[in-house]
Amino acid sequence: MATAVDIVGKCLALIIWGKDHDGQDEVWVHTGNVRASGSGFILDRGEDAPQVKLLSEWIPRIKPVNDELRTILLGAELCLSLTVGPIPVGADPSQFEDIGLITFRTGIS
Picture 1 (tube, helix red, strand yellow):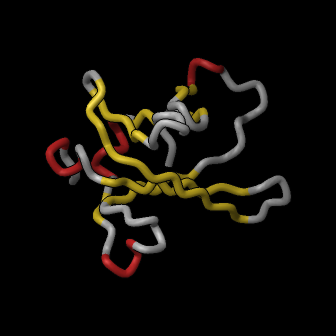
Picture 2: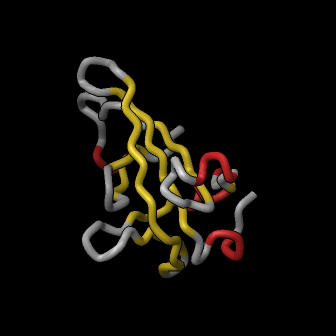
């Protein structure tokens, strides 16, 4: 399980899995350095990209990247894989949290 000591200052690949409007698989990879921010963590993607809030429930899911995948994941030492889906019609906005990249529903898989 990842801890603050394990992740702060390391390069993280945030891998987001989803479907396009035609139902085809899509994958986005966002990399940056993990920084402490208040009582939590952010993914600092550099000056020209928004910082991404890393939700506390995601931290235990952060895994090390093996040497074989490191090049594919843009040199990242760690990775976090998340799946996103469409926002349900009539959803209560209070169930969503803006993390700075995409609005995710709390309890994402």
